[in-house]
Length: 210
Image (cartoon, rainbow, N blue to C red; front, side, top):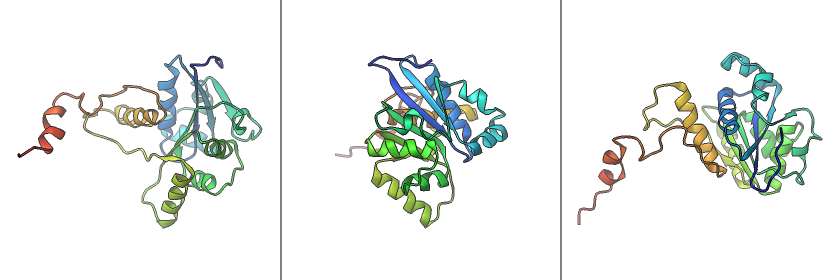
């Protein structure tokens, strides 16, 4: 159920049709365990296919992880207005099509409309773009988004924590995305917290020879 309170953060997770639907699912799972966060979710039509193909989950199962569900075609929903208090939006994964639509103001569905609102209201918008390799047009689109105020966050796996499962790799990227919006979630060890890292980390690299 939606929550009220001055200390509650509203976070919207949007899942598009790019590969990597698990990122959006994992973000919802992590946030679902935080009593001070009210989660909203929008799942695109293409994302429904990706969820089935990659995660063996249907849209209803994923939507059940959120406090509030918005239909992608409902451009009159609350997040479409700047008067609706939304602290942050994470699009994970974000397709190049969605990124391009946001960058150039093509706000035909609720995901792109809400992202546009986040930018104009100077609120946190995290774009976990999932595409590789990137051609010049892709890079121009992402540069344009940065100029508008978005945070471009390609999910780049880290390996210093010696992950032993896909879930640990996914969780590390999700943890870092949440860092961007001021939500702490120590899902996996951070740099300097893993056994042995401090001994081979910055101190051994930046040696004072004086």
